[in-house]
Length: 327
Image (cartoon, rainbow, N blue to C red; front, side, top):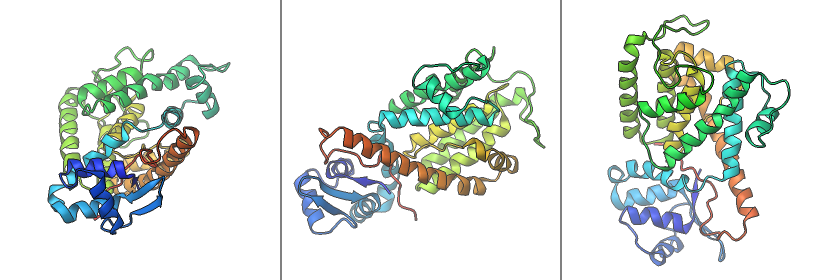
């Protein structure tokens, strides 16, 4: 669960048109009008749970008038507050595991050396080095796009593919022009001539459904379902897995949800879900991983606060992800 400080809660309540100053908010808090809120200390101020704040807003303005805004609000808070060392941690794990799923043999410690310390271990295959190292610019591009509140578009997806396959493919950033296939799959991927239309339909439907979603599980299920569809279309000649998983995380970050990092050890389970087009199993597979990522992010945020005591506790963010209350 996400917890807000007084200042964070006030910013949301101001945007909702409910409260415009901290004095009034503290009065509500002291009277116990926001469920679950408690005061840590005089210095550290109030701690306000997201579901308690949500219930308070619903009481004031009604659910139909606030829920979509509340979900969208999550990223506005997140984008300025993700610790840099956490972002580096995510980059390393995404680069290693997403590449390893495709057969890359570079280890996780060697991935750290390459991406964090710019040191290339000996006896590394050049193509495998590029597969890992290309995640650096691709991930940076994703974070910058999200921080600038750019929607996911076909051009965004092509840009991600271009960066991930740099020095590896002559047709990087371009949809396939000849038929491709997935090893061991019992279905045909989309025909090249159908791919632009199918991807246009894909992005339109994804954005529409996410705009209608109102709870965290619903958002994750939609993103998982469209990830499955993306991999079955297989829009590029190669690099679809790495691109699809980074696009998936683009949508998660965009909706205030921590990344889903599918580890190489779960490759068979993940491929089975894709093959069976099972969005329910994808959700049950993804939820514990995302919840664990919440905890991991929280540890990085607390470490960042401990190392920077000059940060005012009232303004410090204990966990940068909002989890909208489930219905």
